Image (tube, rainbow, N blue to C red):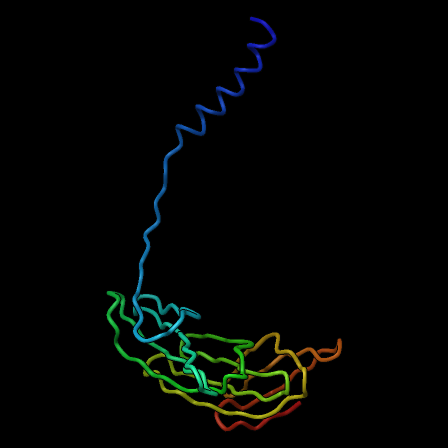
Length: 171
């Protein structure tokens, strides 16, 4: 065997090894949404199904519609709730547990809206307020009725505490 033949052996081995591998296929599920909604987030609920969070932007409107659609395990729409939020407010942070789903929307001027959704009945609670201008929401944690919002502002970090049921706020 010559030196040239020794170079062919590793190449043939790699070719044989990669060509003998099995192809794997993943199941793909597609949902067709009504209206002009775009997918934003999916909240899995284990054996009960999932909640799909979608948004819609209407022309010539200062509001953006956010829709929470609850689907069963067999992909049937069980319930749906929609709310309108100012278009200037962007989804900045979220927190999800077994009972509630919380979403913090804010803008550069410091205006915010905290939306809380009861997962079982899709009951919506919303509170709004103001944090310092240009403060950036980084994390959201919920303990009981309190939302702990970690923000950064001019290189420093701050913790805001917001009661998500009545809107009272503490620094």
